[in-house]
Length: 234
Image 1: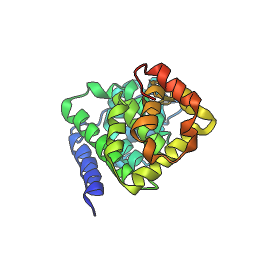
Image 2: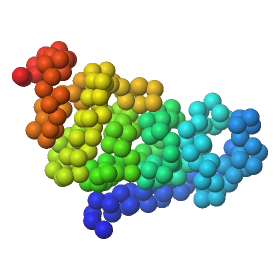
Image 3: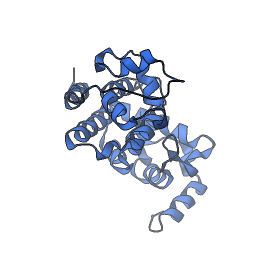
């Protein structure tokens, strides 16, 4: 195993360790959507929570639980591991939005640090693997929305000279240029992060030589880029 997948495996294991101190607690919530048996399972040991309950909680709105942040926090290791392996079957952008809703960045440093390490390791692993378990757009959206920053992930992509990274670039370009969605692109399930200016500028400048798509030569896109970034060069 190369260092890239090893790093992701180590980050996920460290995430488990960081959250191991999260104790079970009596979970109460919407009894219309969840049975007493479900609530009892969610109140027990993390490893005994049934697999079908993890995506349900991961996707559910906070108003379904009496202590949504505490419940989500307890389930983070199960949710995140399933997300990065492509096994959760919940929209990845919704996971980012739910993490924001439960205020993950306000948690204790060991917990937020462990999550940030997973985002970084997952991004690196994605850029070195094509196809990847989760599409490049969904991965980029999750890490960008969750951390409220797109540019650091784009900078890592620019610095990653690997065939998989270039294949992902072609996929992303084809995706966001379909019907020219790039002109008004918002990331996150609820469109929390406006991505057009940063992403378009990056595509037209930083990686234009690696993106073999004539649509990027559109005068309309260049004019949009110049209007959003007045000092942009032709």
